[in-house]
Length: 179
Image 1 (cartoon, rainbow, N blue to C red):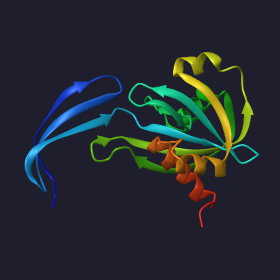
Image 2 (image 1 turned 30 degrees about the vertical axis):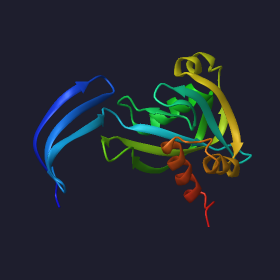
Image 3 (image 1 turned 135 degrees about the horizontal axis):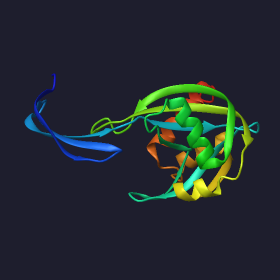
């Protein structure tokens, strides 16, 4: 069945998102469908060092509490790769000279139009102090864990952020870590 939109109205908007309500006809008949649209795509960075460790950041999310995630953020209208480079620097204090696009995914595609770009960053060097930008981002810790341990953190529930799980999966597929 094809969804049919009869009417659409914006019920909330800010500089990051727009929320609209659509009058629709779908598989269950007529109804209202709420849609969140991200104004700009997000970016996710799998920073992998020479010791095969992934960089993770720990922060407290307003919605879900303490979260362990890969460096990520909004593109704010920038080219996604430029945004990924900026986010890696702001959140970790690292710069990468080797960047590989891993794929594009959609967050919460049942309720949102939120494209996300995933990158693998390698050949990392530490930059100037990022304490100020980490504080602005709400980052409590930056840690480096072996790739296999990151998978274990997903398996045992320490990493629960779905986008981080998906980004690590993209990297694992690219790096041929899954058999």
